[in-house]
Structure formats: C-alpha cells, structure tokens
Image 1 (cartoon, rainbow, N blue to C red):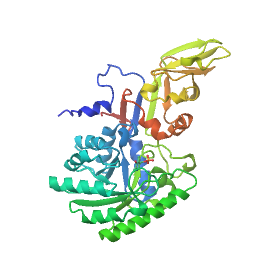
Image 2: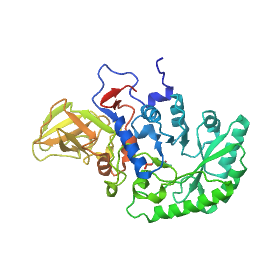
Image 3: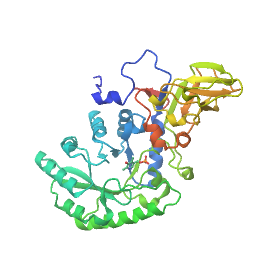
Image 4: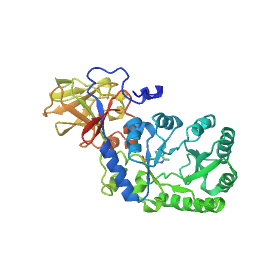
Amino acid sequence: MPFTPPDSMDLLTALSVPASQPRPTRVDVDLDAIEHNYNALQACSGVPVMAVLKANAYGHGIGVVAKHLAARGVSHFGVAYLEEALLIRALGITTPTLVFGGVVTEQIPDFLKHDIQLAASSVEKLEHINREASTLGVRAKVHLKIDTGMERIGTHYYSCGPLFDAAARCSDCDVVGIYSHLANADASDLAHAKLQVRRFEDCVSAATDRLGRQPTRHLANSAAILALDSAHYDLVRSGQALYGALPAAHLAGRVELKPAMQWQSKVVYFKVVKPGHPVSYGSTWVSDTNTRVVTVPVGYADGYPRSLSNRGEVVIRGKRYPVIGRVCMDQIMIDIGDGEAWNGDTVTLVGDDMPVSEVARNADTIAHDILSSISARVPRFYHRSGTPVSP
Ligand SMILES: *Cc1c(COP(=O)(O)O)cnc(C)c1O
C-alpha cells in the first residue's frame, strides 16, 4: 500500500510538485554513515544512545532517518516538539520517544494517546500530566527534567525536592528517566560541565531516595560523549555527532565520525568579471583584475547562510574557492580566479571536503544551525550500501 504522508510532512521533505529532473541543489544522505556514527558513539560511551531527531533530523530528513534507525533497533529517540514525535508515530514507529521541550499543557492528551514521553520540568507540569493521564485512563511516561546550569527549562537543582515528592505522589505517572542538559560540554575548559555533573549527582540521589529506585539517568550530549566520561550514566543523547559533525576542533580523533550529508549544487553560469564591476547586492565585492566567476543556484532561502557573504568557501573539482559578494535568496557567485569550472560541474557546499564545522565557523555559528537550516526547497536523496533508498 502506498504510504500517504501526513500533511505536515510536506514542510519537511522535498518540493511537493517534483520536476522530471530535480534542481541541481540537493542533499544526499548516507544512512550507513549515520549507522556508523551511532555504533561509534555507543562504543565510546558504553551505554545506549538516544538518537536526537529534532529539526528534521538536523536537516537530514526525520522520516527516513527514523525509519532506518528504528529498523536497526535503536532504543530511544529524542525530539524537541510534540509534532516531531507525532510524525515518527505516523510512520508506524513505536520506539520510545522523548520530547525535550517544555510541555505545552493543551498538548498533553496528544502525548498520552500516542505513547510519547514527556519532560516533567516543574511540579505544576508534572501534576498536570498526572491529571490528564488519570482522565484518559493511561499511564504517562515522564523524565524528570533538572536544571543544573542551563537556565532553560527544568526544576533548579537547588530546589528539586518538591518535584521528587510530587513524582512519588503522582499515581498515573511512570518516572522512566531523570535528566539535565549541559551548557558547556564543547568547551576546552570543562569546569562548568563538571559542576553540572556534581549537581546532577546530588539530584539523582535525592530522587532515588524519594522514589525508592533509580530512574534512567541521562546528561551527555554529543560533546560530552566525546569529552566527559563522568557524564555518560545510563544513556547518552546524540544529535550532531550522530550526523557526523565534530562538536569542537579539540575533540578530533576521539571517535571516527563520518559526515552523513553531502550538500551539493552545480555550476549554472560562467563569466569573466572585469575590474570595477562589483558583484551582487550592495556591490560589496569588486575585482581589480579580470577574474572568472561562476554562479551557483543556491541561496539563503535554501538555508545557505547570508552571513557567508564574502566569507564562504565551496569546492569545485577538488579546489576551494571563495563566495564573493552577498549571498542572494537563490544564487551565489564564486570567484574561481585562474581555476577551472564548467557549467554542470558539481559544487560542494557541505560534505567530505567541506566539513560542516568549517562552514559553521565561516558563518560565525555552529554545525547545528547550518544543518537544521537547510530548507524544504532542497530535495533530499538517501543511500544505503551505495544504493538509493526511496524516502
Ligand atoms: C538537541 C539536544 C541534544 C543533542 O545535542 P547535540 O549537541 O546535537 O548532541 C541533547 N539533549 C537535548 C536536551 C537537546 O535539546
């Protein structure tokens, strides 16, 4: 039976009216690389890895990545919003899935009807969840969310007693986890991360005393998997490293990560630009010699950051060339100088020879931002064992 995607999927996948030949700007996802990274992170931490699939699986495509990982027996998924978890359920995937974000009380029944795990970040939220579970006659699966130093969501580590009391009282909730989130695990100085670990330890002991058993403890993100063994506990959560992005340059070599994404386009135009003829909006780049310039059909509406204006680099025929002038909505210009490039040549924006961490640095941001910003206008293609996989 053909799979009918839910409405919300149109926003998350390729253009919904495909051409007979797709536009040359495309993302190719290597599912084997994701699996390789998954196994490497599991070996490094020695505990199960929660695969973080929020933000369209960091731009890789939540539907295909979820199906692939579920089929390989991945035991935990993490997402940011309820809707992302619902999409996973709509694909028939029953893998335990935690929504990290603050629970929106009106959405609690949706969580419960679809067996989606909730972050219990305050006494009030926990009691609300419990009441809804009782009304629906189901059990709510909650993870107690402690704030150990991020000041985002969660009960403060210094006043979490009442949360544990409430958890012990809530008769329709199963406390399946206790977790917190690190603010600085990618820093070379781990003092703050270690402080968060100590605060977390104290909260775990208090929760264990109060509940009479220890829930699954989880604290580490990708950076902490590589950098901080004491944060591994019973489960680790990985997003960027799962997709092959190195959390920080100083963590190179800890595990072998393979970039899962190649974001490429093709040269669609070639010309020679004369001196005194500025390139692109605002005329921010001018040559003082004749130079060869190619145009590539990708722009900020595809998620190619506008902050790469006069700062980005791409790879054509194995050589790096600069993005010149402003990044437009749909096109960028590349100065190839004395280099060679022909219409139809592949242009790598992000991939094996243009690591996302470097693109992120040029754009003054982080890999998460680059990957998750690649828009729905860019079609995704999937590969496994070197052969295409249909979405
Ligand atoms: C996004 C997120 C992660 C994953 O972070 P990475 O740095 O991509 O590994 C882990 N935990 C929580 C709570 C998150 O929001």
